[in-house]
Amino acid sequence: MAAIDVGTNSVLLLVAEARAGTVSAVEERAEITRLGKDVDDQGHLRADAIERTVSVLRAYAARAQELGATRIAAVATSAARDAGNGEDFLSAATDALGARPDIVSGRREADLTFRGALMGLDPEGPVAVFDVGGGSTELIVQVGPLSDAASLDIGAVRLTERFIKHDPPLAEELSALRAFVAHALKDGPNLRGRPLVGVAGTVTTLAAISHELEPYRPGALHGTVLASETVTELVARLASMKLEARQEVAGLAPKRADVIVAGAIIVEQVCVHARADRLLVSERGVRWGLAAELLAEGPEVPQP
Image (cartoon, rainbow, N blue to C red):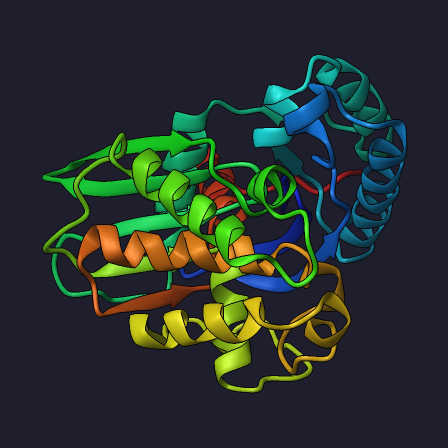
């Protein structure tokens, strides 16, 4: 099976198989295509962004088939659901994949995130999960057998485009961005008193920088702990640098360097909002949740 997460900033592939009734990764890939570039301002997907993203999807489909996947499922998140021309992307993506991606709601994205994030982890008690994407941030808490969730329009790409106009960012830009995030988080569920689990590229990038992990290796950081104090220190360090210098930081992919400051501030403010002194790093999220759903539907049927 192959599960693909088409986000505002990146496109993630998981080719997996069922082993002992669970999802086991065969191969994972990630490419930054910036599908959501300028969506916050213009309200539609740029033609070049669609082209970049569809090109990656075509390559992913070919690779999945090489690895023996007979089922491909894809979901598109914040950028695609916010854009007025999302259907243009869906049409091109369907041609590339041979399967039509599903533009998911914020709640559906949160549910997939929660299901995927905890795979391979063993946190103590009910947890709070957050996923910082390019266009939105999902917050999910366990409430008995159910969950309370929110999808907020605070993402690394969206807030970079909205608030950061100078290189390096001005103090007043950072202050305004922090205040905006802190206010937005008030509309989300109460995260306090629970182990905090952070998902997606911003969180794993901060962990990679703190460990000076280069090149990045999938699985290397899953289940590691990132102190909130470290996050605050990284925000200050990265925000003091010009873009060119950030692109040379060990553990930070150059294509992510322009949006990492806004993303890191979101992580910082989630920790403040949750009153958490640490978070558990998860390298899994939407694509893993989607793969778990595919597994639950039954085994793949080989093509004749």
